[in-house]
Length: 592
Image 1: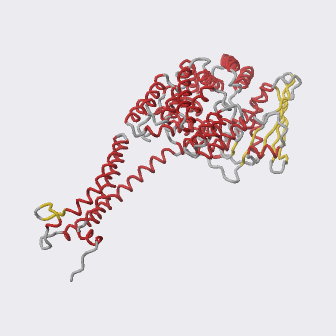
Image 2: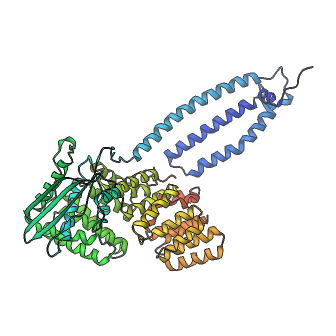
Image 3: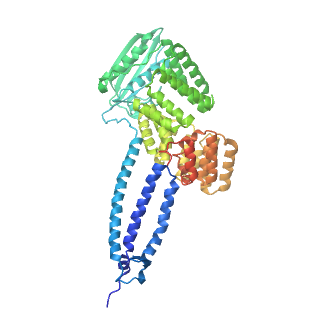
């Protein structure tokens, strides 16, 4: 008696198994081709997703049809009616083998092409972060002390410190801690080893300034922080007119003391000299600008910078300072958005007229194109020039990270901000930005740590408690989020997060009440955040409505629309592609 085939044997006999394998490899091939064509033709994401779901639904239908029917020389017939003498199952099986092998070879070719394209895109997105070896020289330049009798030359001492920072940061083998971190330790009682630990440096440069009439005495000393040993010290007695020469002498002596060999045996960078009176105005302008939270100080900074330029119209540092002050005034409402950014761009363009290869000017223009014009393509081009001219400048690195977030390049932004934190370990703004990029990267534990560090350094830093609360909310730690948002003094930020928290809790009455109050009071200032909250609720209609309102009022929050996780639910909607295309993102960025 002939043994009846098992179900598995019958599946193989009817070529259902090989048919299923053929279907899967063909389906995978179609999906990959659709994805590649999507990149080339900029097709919306929903097209490739629709193809995937269609193939998924058709798969069981294909399996059933393979079981019921088979190909014969006279066409498709029910398997049960085909006699063994006329069946061509074996030929069909061999053909399926050839089909599977051919498609697998084709898939391999597509994978190689895809890998090349992906690698190219990744390489284009990689920003060269200066490598610091374990034996690299790391140094912090502490604020020089003012020992003048009248104690009225702190601005001059600060200016000398800044100039030393600027000069030393141009020495490639040297890693120099940024100004914000070193100046945060001004007038502290910490000992050198403690300072070195906080700043994570090997060497510390400290000094003092004593001015009497036109006579100037500058004392500088270099300390090995590991053992608190003085390696070098020098005193300079000069007339005030020789200030630039003194700055270069001090910088050169420090470099020699560190026994650093400069790349390509190039000479040390030199200060940009100007008239002494003009330089004094500039130093006072810099000191006023560092009180950027004070609108009156910003006006004072503009006045002093203009006095510098009235004496020396080609003094580049004063033009760069003006650019930053005007941008700050544009954002805080002192000048108005359009006027402030217009003046900022004019000041930066003036720099490039004087020095066409000024890296900071290109970085500032890129930032203006990003925030003011939403010209993302132009911002990319200008920022690339800045990096090529000076890829190790901490300020350029920070501005590059901001641009990367805008372009949705989150991992690149994370690496840049982490490097920025290594250069500026006591700067609350660094940790504020780091918390934001970790949040966008869904690295929420690290985001919370960065937010807490920012709060530790500056408890009243604008919006930090808001960001802390939203990170906790993203982790679904609702009670902790409620505690965090209570520390946020800004009512608008509070209302948004409270609405989100209570929506997550399921208390729609409270959630809607907070949302209505937010819209009633802050619809013009917080259109972008309102859109975020509606996206958080999966209310796509209102989310898109408020995104378009944010676009109309030029809400700068839209700079981060590609990286904001709350908008992920909108990405499958065809209106998403339409909106970010309207925003003007480059074609290689506007697919998420």
